[in-house]
Length: 64
Image (spheres, rainbow, N blue to C red):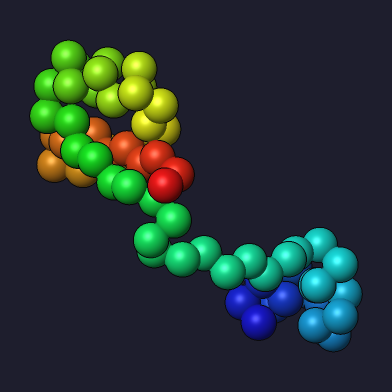
């Protein structure tokens, strides 16, 4: 509904043309946190993907 209103659509059917709903399960990814550049480098080499940074920590994820 938020996307529909943001795009100015009168009908949800118009919005569904441009969006798709997906079911994301929490257990699909393994999260890891890197405190140093060396740890971040090791996670990237192990196949982890950078997500974001929070409190000077870098957060990564990898599919199970």
